[in-house]
Image (cartoon, rainbow, N blue to C red):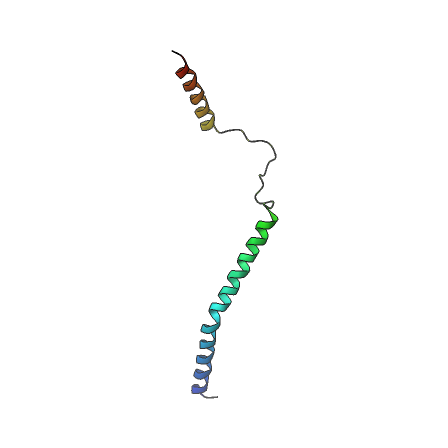
Length: 79
């Protein structure tokens, strides 16, 4: 096998790769989409659940804003 035959073989393999690459990428993309759809049908897994089962308390900012709203409503009702 001489150098010319090796270059011809590499050229043919390169063209074959260029022709097959879009199809292979599309197939991989379809498999990823199918996997995501299957996971979505199953619902949220253990990753999406909260780590603790106790109810969370509102943050300080929420508590402060609720207090301000209630004071504002009370003060706006007085003459």
